[in-house]
Structures are given as C-alpha cells and as structure tokens.
Length: 372
Image 1: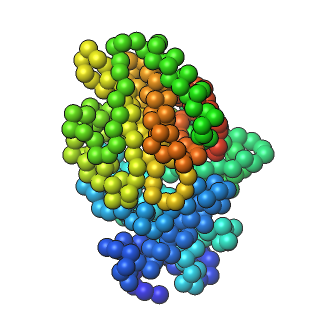
Image 2 (image 1 turned 135 degrees about the horizontal axis):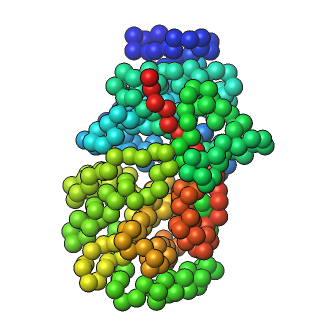
Image 3 (image 1 turned 90 degrees about the horizontal axis):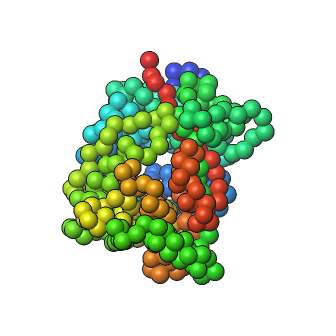
C-alpha cells in the first residue's frame, strides 16, 4: 500500500484502498492511466444508471472539466479492490460562495455493489471533506423506483422511494432530502417542428412588441456579456431551491469567460444561448441554454433557463425555449434528444416543458448532511 493510500477507520472489504485522484496535464502522460481507468468506470456507472449510452463521455471530453479554477476546486479519491478500480468519490469545493459546503459524488461499479465498498468509500469521502474544513455535504442521486414507502420532498412537491438502496445508504449516514428534481427528455425530429413553431408563435404574440429574441453561440458577444452574467447570477436566487438554499453568486464578464466558456470551448462543446431582450430598456430578462458535448452521441442538454421574476407572466419561458429549440434544430439536425432538469415544485417551467413535449425520464434526490 502506497503512503498516500487511505482506508476508513471502520471495517472495510478485503482488498479495499483509496488513493488521491491525480489530474494529468494531458492524456498522453503516463499519469493519465488512472484517468482513463476512471473514465471507463464512470461510463459503466452511467450506462447502468440511465440504461442507455447518451451520457457516455470520452476522456478527452472529461479532462477539461477537471482544470483548476479560482471559483471551484475539484478533488477526489479512487477506490480499488486489490488494485482494480471499483469506485470513485469526487468533491467540488466552492471557493467564492458557499465556502462551508462540499459537493460530493460517490460511484461504485455495478459489479462491486453490495459488498461494502460504497460504505467504506463514503467514510473516506467524509473524512476528506472534514479535512478540507467544510461543514456540509451535498449530493445528488438518481433514484430508481422501488415499491414501498416514499420520502416526501420538504418543498411539498415530489418524493423518492424510501427503499431505494442509495436512499437507504444516505439516510443511515445522516443525510436529509432537500429537494426532488425531475430529469426529462424531449425527442426531436422534423415531425415535431410545426408544433414547436406554433408554440413559439403563440408565445411571441402573447409577449408583445416589448420583447425580442436574441441568440448567440460561445463566445458570447461583448454586447450581451454583462446581461448574460447578470442572468447567471439570478439563477442562484430566483430558481427554486427547496431546503438547499445557496449564497447569491457573483457573476461578471470575466467569470463567464473563464468558468463557462473556457471549459466548453476546450471540450469542443456546441453551446447556443437564447435570450429575451426587453426592448424599452435593452435589458436581457430571460435566457435558455442548449449544449452539446463532442462525445459522439445524438443528445443535447438544456442547461440553465430563467425568466426574471419581474417579467414573468408574459409567456417568455415558452418563447425563449421554443425559439432556442428551433434554432438548435437548424444548427444540429442530427440531434435526436434533449435532456433537462427541473425542481418538482417548479410547476410553471414544468408546464412549459410538458407543452413542448418533454416527458419524465428519472427522478433525482438532492441531499444534504451537516457535519457535527
């Protein structure tokens, strides 16, 4: 066992070890062997979770996301059984807001589950969070349906199966459910375009002449960069958060360039931002992002979407989403599916998505644990 390998204090499975995640400078480095192993593990877990290959990513797409940032630090541990990689624990440590928090993701290979590796890996992860001086862990977990009792979201909308193994593990370790999110999928195709146009045109008529649609691909044009940054900041205050409130984020043009665009461009992502401009003031008051990684799949992700509170009630959510989807179809006609997340209590945005044709795909629980 190498000097930097750790084991939990309690009993662990035979052959268990945990080693620090090291990020290679390039995938050609000798040090990249473990990163390639981790990529294969991640993709095996992803296939098992989503029952398809839509979220499988190659190492060259993943690596730029691990680059250090002044806004967030990423760390992790690789979990091995007699030297074979069977799991990983990743941490994101915010550096400018929510600095008491750590975001954790724990994944165990399907073939290694049920033998104590998840429990032992969690102990290693919590110890690393404590060593980093953080007092709260947050994690997001996909929950598969299991018959039996339910755990309700504290928001009053949505629930998850209490007997799901992941939920059971989190409950035993003192986590509380903070919110339930719905992951939805939209099937794209020429046969759906007329319906999208009708929804867009109806929303445009309802919004009136005070609002106009604008759009761009990364890098964001200078004329929109400040407005885009302001909208990203409002995502941290205006989107439903359940029992998981976060600090208001500070966004400016530099943060957009360095935290969002630099990584996306390095990965070769295609990003289309649709926005609504309030004509009398010139202010951007709504936006929606579509993103496609250079991963060989035919999927895209609908990322952040927001309508500023003071401009709601004008059907701007429908307008910006339908317009952006139609523009995306013209740019990427080969994309077959779009995935998105919404809090279950965000009924106005779910109404928009359902009208557009999104259907539920999986449920995800957002959990928190305060360390004492």
